[in-house]
Image (tube, rainbow, N blue to C red; front, side, top):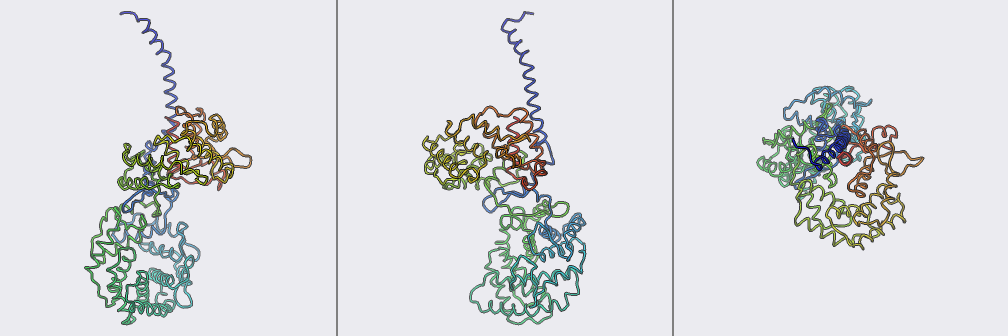
Length: 631
């Protein structure tokens, strides 16, 4: 065997020297990433499911576009009386079994007050409404309410001197609301099978209801044009309420004429909730109350198929304000049954309803207005966990419309996030829209910067410039620098509504775009950044002060790391000890759904001063921080 050449020996010796170092750095990389792996949602199936569930509640799909809003993560563990009432009602109408009904009943009964009424803190509604939801739901799951006598006394206490009932709070005392309240009282007493249903209390309501029917039937009969749906609907509700008290009472001819006139006019309605309720009321008056009423059922079926069903979402729920309203969806189910129609997408509707179920009931079906920034955060998180239950084309249309819109000074934040989100959906996004955006920014750059331009919009304008690799003319950058200094001197940091960390971030971005130190030196920025480090384990928004709680947060830490990357693209300017402290701080900020802005320890220590909740932004920032410092 030939001996090694001198050059080979050198290489071999070099390997022997470097191998331990390589193993050391590899081990350090493993140690650095191990804490991240504990947090990585892909390593935790429960966390994956929780985050998917949260994203689904944040998703909003409308007729043409779709996106994500912000669903309060804390509400994902809280049952809501209204949505529980509506969901149980739907499942019963479809002949579905409501699982573990005793847990629902126990929770509802826990909401009962001493006077017999029910009050759910998630619903800012009159107690009469909430009591109706509670009694109806208990009845539908096969349980009786507690303190039935107190409930009866509570609802009867709401009767006015004229005989109608009123809401206990929050709604104006007028005829329309009082008729609604009277209708609810009758429903509650009938469900309780109370003797009061035939007593003097309700008989005292007959005269004011008759007076209203006389007035409204005359208005309908004498009108040469169709009245607003609200007026027709109130007439039908009043008639239903009136007949519920005394079904044996003779119906005057003028009432019959008015009902038949409304029945003819309903064919011109557009399929909104009033259309659905009006048709259901008409059919109920005809079938249950034996009022001589001519209905064109073929025409009503046509309206339902063409106008009502077109408003159903892809999940089978009746779409209202971009989200689900279970009570309105139940109205459409009732309409389908009344007209002998097959309700579309029943299985999907059942799945959708059941997906909001938690142990004690159903969580809020809250309308979450979509926003561009939340759409970006959600798409980023969705990519991490493989969540794909959204309409890619509709979201892209939402984003492209934002980018296509002629910009004003308040549009650049949305345009930045739309650009970033579109890249997540289409990494090869280029073409006409891309070039149009670059041209628009270059054209508007000089006029965009004025003394009144908000710094937040300037920031996102600059970040968009960075992403598009645009070189702004030096006069534009100088103008922006002067504007920033002028606002900082005239207003002060507090009136700018910017924290010290925000200001350092802005300075770093503008100098990064300009490729020069226009406002403060890099060394000065680093020193100020060091002053914002908290030994608790993250960065704080403002310098430490004797009388100010030391509350570092995820947002400030995210900005700090962004600043570091702008100052030195190759290195995060944190020691190993600091990196470990940041990871541990984020671990302490972990919640059932996402990550909070501050750790649990900080929230417990400072209470209201550090009272934050998990959001899509804080969760997104937490994972971005971990990616940046671990890899």
